[in-house]
Image (cartoon, rainbow, N blue to C red; front, top):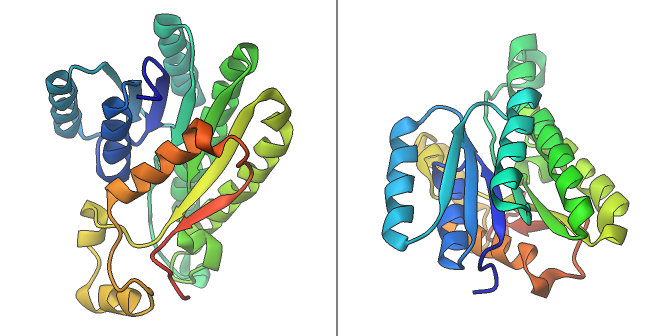
Amino acid sequence: MIFRDHVVLITGITRGIGRAIALRFMAEGAIVAGMYMQDDEAAQQLKHIAEDMGSHIRLYKGSVSDPTFVAEVMKEVTGLYGRLDVLVNNAGRTNDQMALFMDEQQWADVLDTNFLGTCYCSQEAVSYMLPQGKGAIINMVSVSGVYGREAQTNYATSKGAIMGLTKLYARLYAPHNIQVSAIAPGMIETDMAQGIPAEKMADFIKHTASGRLGTAEEIADAVIFLAGPLASYHTGQTLKMDGGFLR
């Protein structure tokens, strides 16, 4: 268990990819904390699973777009456990529209959560990682940010901006033994994917070399790699986990 007693903070922790990442870290012996926005039932379920595993987990309800909330959570977690080893910026939201029809509120909703939330969390995390002389930050982006998918203008923009932020933070903090990386999932089998029309899903899979959806557990495995010692020479890059998505 390479993460035994390491402290890991995950945003968007209660569902889908975030939940899978939490379970994977707990299986590796980590102490896990997380932020979530609204799903109290899912939060309680995750707590029960952690108890059954004999693991430690603390959950905080609030928005990553609120810098005061983020700062308070980081302060409490580090106060309780004395350190912060890994931050996974997974929280995100969509509000899809073409660029010409995107209104101001749609831009703000998605950019505030996806991009500014990642900025606030990363900024706070680094302030605790620097004194301890090590850490890892993994940012969850998307193939939409890589390819600039036109029907997801605000979402693709926010994820592209996070990819730039990843490179910036990696350059700043690699000399301090803080690795900063990103993962760009393709279409992953989660609750969010279930709401996609069948025709659109079929087209996405048609243009994916592996011919299937990915799983949240496969993304969690990639996070474990990037956060661990096997990736000590990996920083500033975006790892595509998209099954060979072609366009």
